[in-house]
Image 1: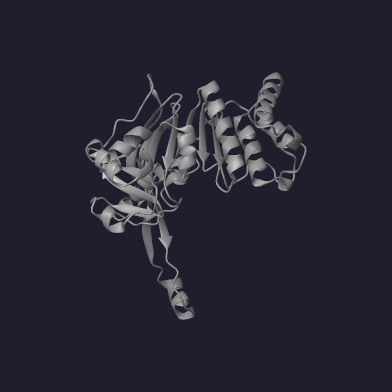
Image 2: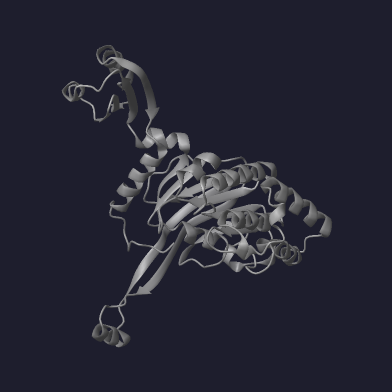
Length: 353
C-alpha cells in the first residue's frame, strides 16, 4: 500500500498476479458539526455547517497470493475503512480495487464465497445461540457439503481447543473465547482471502498468544492471503514479514520489518551494567544521549560509530555487562505516528476508522 505523495519502498512479494490490487483508493465522508448551546442548536437546524473528512487519501496496494500483511496505525488512521472497502461493505469516493479479480463493492456471490472478514469488536455469531448453531447456519449460507464442513470444523475447533465451548450460548463466553469461535466461523468455508480487523483488541496475553499461533499455522497450511489491521506491535512481530504503517489515511511506510529499522533510525541502544552508579558528569563527557538508572546506563550511539567508541567506554566505566540493540519497533513506529500526524498532510484530520 502506498500513497503517491510518499517515497516508495520495495515491499516483498511472491511470484504471480496480485490477489489484491488497489489504485488511488480514497474515501471521504461529509460530517455535520453540532454547535453547543440551545440557541446555537436551534440555529443549526436551519444553517447546518459541514466539513469533509478524508478517511483514505488515494492509496495504492498490491498483495500477492499467500502474503500475510500487517497494516499498523493508531485509532482513526483509516485501517478499518480500508478493510470495509476491500470487503465491499462501503464504496469509495474515487479509485479502483480488485480482490480475487472482482470489484469488492459489486458484491457478487462468487466473490463473497471466497473471502472472510473478522472484526474484533463485532460479532458474526448469534448472541443467544451456541456457536455450534451459528456454524450450521454458515454451512447453509456457503453451501458447504456435510463431510467438508465437519472435517474443517473439527480441525479448527481442535486447533483452538474450543470444543467444550460449542454448546454454550455465545453471551456466556469471555472475549477471548468468543474471538476464537469467530475465527472458526470465518474459516469454515475455507476462504482464499482473510481480512482481520484488530482481532486481538482487548485480549489478555495468553489469548493473544493462542490466536497468534493459530493464525500463523492456518495461514501457512492454506496459503491464504491475509491483511491484518492492528495497533499492537506484538501482532506484527508474531505474524507478519511485511508492514504497512498508516496514519490519517496516508501511508508512511510499506516494506519489511528489517528495512524499517534501517530506514527510520540512525543509532543503536547500548546498555551498560556497571559495578556502581556512575558519575553523571563522566557519562555526560561521553557526548551521547543517555539515561541513568542506578548502576545502569543507556546510551544512544550512532550505528556507524559503535565499533570506534565502544572499546573506550568499556575501559573506563567498570562495566560488568553490555548489550547493543536496535531501537525497539514500538518506539520507531510511535515516532512515525507523531511525525506523520504533524507533517501537514492535505485535508481534514480525525478520519473515522
